[in-house]
Amino acid sequence: MELPFAESYRIKMVETIKRSTRQEREQWIKEANYNLFALKSDYVFIDLLTDSGTGAMSDRQWSAMMLGDESYAGARSYYNMKNAIKEILGFDYFLPAHQGRAAENVLFSTIIRKGDVLPGNSHFDTTKGHIEFRQAVAIDCTIDEAKNTQLEIPFKGNVDTAKLEKVLWQYPREQIPAVVLTVTNNTAGGQPVSMENIKAVAALCKKYGVLLLMDSARFAENAYFIKTREAGYADKSIKEIVREMFSYADIMTMSSKKDAIVNIGGFVAFKSQELWKSCQKFCIMNEGFITYGGMSGRDMNALAVGLDEGTEFDYLETRIRQVEYLGMKLDEYGIPYQRPAGGHAIFVDARRVLRHVPKEQFIAQTLGIELYLEAGIRAVEIGALLADRDPVTRENRYPDLELLRLAIPRRTYTNNHMDVIAVALKNVYDRRDSITKGYSIAYEEPIMRHFTVELEPAETRKEAVEL
Ligand code: F0G
Image 1 (tube, rainbow, N blue to C red):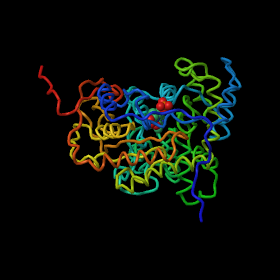
Image 2: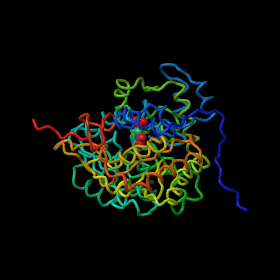
Image 3: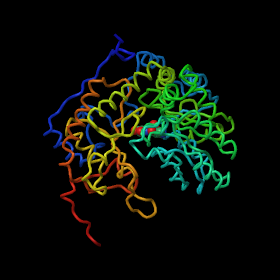
Image 4: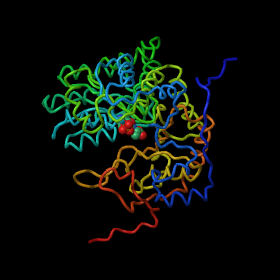
């Protein structure tokens, strides 16, 4: 008999999580104004809000923390991080930052000017935010297939190279500071980019003399998919694939809270010494001196070990097979999600579940609230609330997809938790036709409203008063 698959680690330390009653959850979500971000974590049984900074560090990482060198300048921990970035990723120069968006800030303060355009594949929210804040434009060139959740293709995060070339051809080179390639493509559902596509994008960048920036939060998960899905890579190690991926990039930004399996940290790495130098001042002004950039020595040590562990096949296989396991459970119950299962999350296609809720009443958010009420599970809306309003017209933007993201923290939950998530969703799915009303906005901030928005059940909606 073939042995079943099991995790490539065992558990040394545990953290208690608490169940609650539906009645308690009804009270708590009301007090949170139906915003899942406003819930106390103690009110959550299984937290799938994000896979960012929520993973469990290993014994090696915790012991590396004890060896942290907290010197202001030139700490040993900085050199540990530098060596890991050089050996594993192949970059000679880097600046530490406290997380991914801070790394973006350091880089973009140097390279982006008003009126610039940055094409790429579904720029992450903070990346787009940093671009638009500088009055530049992010142009999404993701393949159209990514919009069809039921289509099963291996590299749904890819760039449509024809769309990209059109942009590169249309704008003068000076107006395009970089092409942003996000691996894996978070917004499209944690979907990978193939090596073939990376090469094609790099070739276009070369042809038009534009830098290639890889937003690399989940680069190791991307490498796992290349190894398991792309011809010619099955016999290569994850570390070999990672080196090849980055051999095509000029710059990388990193949120280490994902694939470097730490709770905080990030960096921007460069091939060019000149560019590294010109970014240093923004690191010093916003993050800290160039050898710590907002990180403590112990955090840099844990990050260096995390880069090594995060690029080991056994770890990645455990990780990705858990996400796949949840996907298989949802298949059993017929629940539609972005196919195939992504690297870090399952993205439930909320529009195919809640067919009676109008888009103006936030379909994916409504599903997220129902899932919380059902079992104390917290997911996150990737839909109209997140898409926010058009910066110019101030009209609500309704994206092509209304998704509920179930992000799986690394090395944190067991497959029993996955079973609970799947059954909770099934219960909501079974009563889907009785859910006919969503939520309306009672209060919203001018930008990034989803974090602090206050909602109310749609039937109690007060019509806006004409002034
Ligand atoms: N790039 C990508 C692709 C991301 O997914 C994130 C964060 C960032 C950059 C920014 O990094 O959070 O360290 O500042 N994604 C988290 C998420 C927040 O939940 O997907 P950060």
